[in-house]
Amino acid sequence: MLSIVILAAGQSKRMNSKLPKVLHPLGGLPMLAHVIQATEKLNAHQTILVTSPSLSSFDAYTTVVQDEPKGTGHAVQTAINALDPKAEEVIILCGDTPLIHSNTLQTLKDSKADLTLIGMKLDRADHAYGLVMQDKKGAPCQIVEFKDATTEQRKISFGNAGIYKIKTSLLKELLPKLDNQNVAGEYYLTDLVALAHQQGYKIEMLQGAEEEFQGINNRVELAKAEAVLQDRWRLQMMQAGVTLVQPETIFLSHDTKIGKDSRIGPFVTFGPNVKVAEDVTVLSFCHIENTMIEEGASVGPFAHLRGNTVLESGASIGNFVEVKGSRIGRKAKAKHLSYIGDAEVGDKANIGAGVITCNYDGFIKSRTVIGSNSMIGANTSLVAPVTIGEGAIVGAGSTITKSVPADALAVTRSQQLTKLNWARKFREKNGGN
Ligand code: UD1
Ligand code: MG
Image 1 (cartoon, protein in one colour):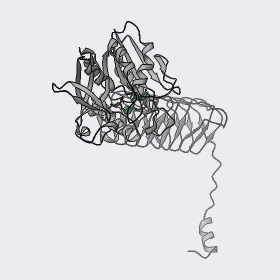
Image 2 (tube, protein in one colour):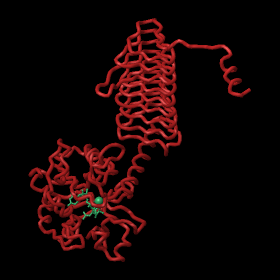
Image 3 (cartoon, helix red, strand yellow):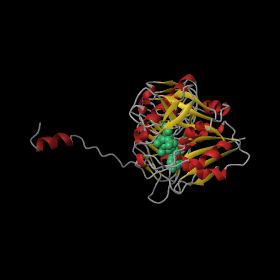
Image 4 (spheres, helix red, strand yellow):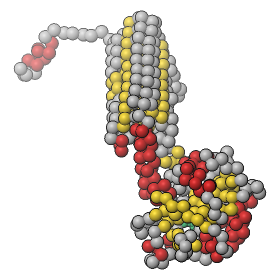
């Protein structure tokens, strides 16, 4: 039986943030949630999170609070009483290592040694990982933290990923032996390796690339990890049949879904909760979140969609149009310079340039209903709550405060005054030509 312990307490000093480090998001999801997701396929018997007192979310898991951050070894000591007595082995991970793949964890789970760790091949000295020392046979015999290492030791090329599997009996035997006689004055979990080696236990090291095991301790590392994730997701999208034009400028969220043969232009950002169907076109410079876009619709350039918006199939949203909390019917169009908020727009309705739904009176938000096949003239304000009937026409420049029946014309413009030759006389009087 397998238990998982995820270390998610600590001071987050290097992050310099009010938010606990492990809650900083990557692709819109807290880094801790990425780690949890990677462990889910292991079907472990239990997952224990060690958190600081300020971190109270993730209710679905057993949470133990480490009152004072006295190091990773101390964090595991805090968790030990919460371990199920039937757990024969424990996988320990750090909550700040969110790029780990679930199949790597599966390989770790399958390893047979008493203690297995993961070593990253490093070809640079400017890092702060623990360094894995190996005995003559190549087995790990000690981890020296970077802070405590000599210049010579810092040339060692295996960094410790901070991810381990260990037999529970061994963990329980060795944990009480940790001390804090080191530069940081902390109880290092990594000291288990030397202790286990001294007692002749079998220790193994899996090897992997740094990219997968990067720890995030500051905002520079956070940005690097985000870049790695974005690249992975872009690749998956393209392999699944989505065209990304200049993919490096397109930003996805952890839950972005885009259907086959859709085409996304440069500089488009997907916030959380976006589903795009097949054959959709999104032109450049759009920001889209909490939105569902159905087949064949087109968006942008420069559009902003948000707040539970639905674009039904074939709908078209053009440049400088913001749509919030609205349903835009099949083949309906709003092509230029509009705000459509809290509205229902019927099939094939045509929203002219500059149309605004006035949905907020400073206290409450109200809805606008625009019937199918209606035509809203340019520069019209629709003061909600208001309904425009099916097939109705609203004259350009109107301010509509009362509902308009189906097939009617509504215009609220004042009469136009035209004075013949007035301009010419005005110019002559003022000495112009
Ligand atoms: C740790 C390892 C280092 C490894 C690196 C990999 C130790 C002593 N060092 O260093 O060998 O190369 O990870 O990224 O383990 N935490 C707690 N309680 C604490 C301290 C930390 O829960 O008292 C948690 C943190 O939230 C974090 C994780 O443990 O998720 C690792 O702690 P961190 O301070 O980031 O350790 P590193 O210096 O990165
Ligand atoms: Mg770290």
